[in-house]
Structure formats: C-alpha cells, structure tokens
Image 1 (cartoon, protein in one colour):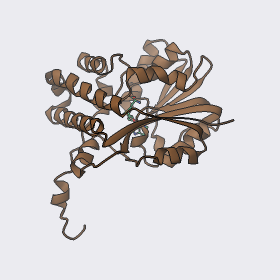
Image 2 (cartoon, rainbow, N blue to C red):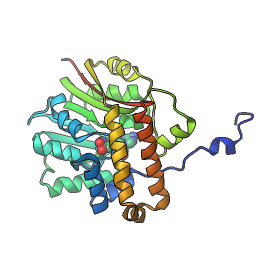
Image 3 (tube, rainbow, N blue to C red):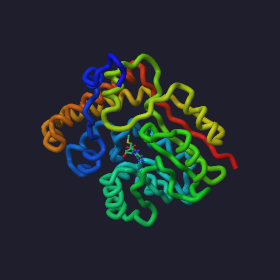
Image 4 (tube, rainbow, N blue to C red):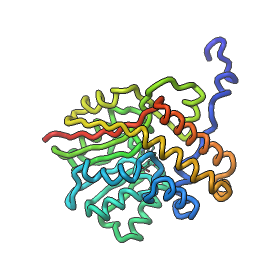
Length: 281
Ligand SMILES: C[S@@+](CC[C@H](N)C(=O)[O-])C[C@H]1O[C@@H](n2cnc3c(N)ncnc32)[C@H](O)[C@@H]1O
C-alpha cells in the first residue's frame, strides 16, 4: 500500500459490484424486463448495450451479410440479435458469451424459433482466444463487448485470424475517453464488471496493427446517451417489479450506473465509436 493512502480512503469510492447480465439474461422472459427493452430500444433483441435499433438494422449491410454468410458474434448475450440476423438474413451464426444464463437463453430461443440448425451459442471466455480455425467466418462482430476483454490487440488479432480473406469485422466501444472523468465516475461506470478505457485513436491503431484495412469509424456517442437515459427511465417506472427481481441494492446500483453513462456521454467525456474494417484478400 502507498504511504499516505490508507485502504479506507481509496475504498471510500470503490463501488460494490452491480449485476447487469445475470439478471437481464436470467429474467429475459419477465414482462418487466421485456417492457424495459421495448421502451429503451424500440425493437426487442434482448439488448444490454448501447446499440440503437437503427444501428442494429445497419449491421447486416456494414458486414456485407447474405444468405451464405457464416458469422461469428462475440459477446452475444441473450442471443436475440444473432437470432434476428439468422432469421432475416438467412445466414448461419455462432454466438459466444462468457455468461451462462445468456447462452442458455440463446439456445432455448434458437430451438423455440426453429433456428437451431443455423444459429448456435457457446459459453466461452474470449479473452483466451477464439475456439475456431483460421479463415472460418465471412464476418465477425461484437456489440459493446471488447471493453470487457483484457488485451485489445490479442482479441483483434483473433478476429483477423478467424476471418476469411475479404471478410468484414465490426465492433463498438463506448469507453473511449473524451474528457475529464473523476475517480468516482470511473468507479460507478465500472461497477458492473471488468472494463478497459481507451484513448482516442488507440482502437484505430490496434485495428490497423491486427492487419485490417479500409477502416471506417462512426461516432455514436449521442445514441449511447439517449439509450442510457431511456433505459434509466424505463427501469424507474418499473422499480417495484425490478426491485423484487434484483433486490434494492442492485436496482439502485444499476440506476446509478445508467445515470453515470448518461452524464458522461451527453457531456462527451466518454465517447462511443463504431468501427468497421476489412481483412483484404
Ligand atoms: C454490453 S453486453 C452486450 C451484449 C450484446 N452484444 C448486446 O448488444 O446486447 C457485453 C457482453 O459481453 C459479455 N462478456 C463479457 N466478458 C466476456 C468475455 N471475457 N468473453 C465473452 N463474453 C464476455 C457479457 O457477458 C455481456 O453479454
């Protein structure tokens, strides 16, 4: 411990871990959670991210998906969006996520919708690498997940490796630092798990370093601010039902997290970017 910095002082601002994913995926079918998703995003893909429906609808085109595409989704959560792609595009898709309730939910939904021959979901901690051979997929994407993975260069290298030549990749990062952020804000913004914050330009440098070309970057900070505000409001309206499911401490912790995301992104002190690139063949 550093002299003059007793644990109590630093501990004062450490937020207790708040659960987002176990509750969101484990309670996927609950009406209160479904209503929150519909009110937040418009269309319910089981999201726990900052992806607007408009962005969701653009992804197939950005990735150049067609009926014969084989697609990898990193951090698929509850599986709702991957299944939507398999359904509307007709592509085949593998989804990976570390969260067991998310993967259970995704495979149940695939069965229920008759998509299990085209869409499969596996529990996997992708920080250890992607469990596929070289040049397996036509497209790889990851919505608001890479911020949770230690080693950005390694995961980008893995995404490059499993793509076929000519394949497209896409990911979003809501943790690009755009201004002054206090230690309390960092603690609250990080209260739901492991996070990596990056300086502007670092993702572009690492994407290029992994071998990708034709790098395209879109600033989506404003839509992240909008989603955070709507999500907070939709949850507040259903406080009683959500408190019964999550417990009061978790409910309030998640509300603080969402308010923090809203103020940081609406003031552009944290930025969200969407990155697309090609593995040239
Ligand atoms: C912000 S959520 C996004 C989920 C989904 N992509 C969406 O748009 O709703 C981040 C997801 O990353 C997953 N995740 C976190 N760390 C991971 C890891 N090491 N390996 C695989 N998935 C991970 C979480 O379980 C969670 O489902």
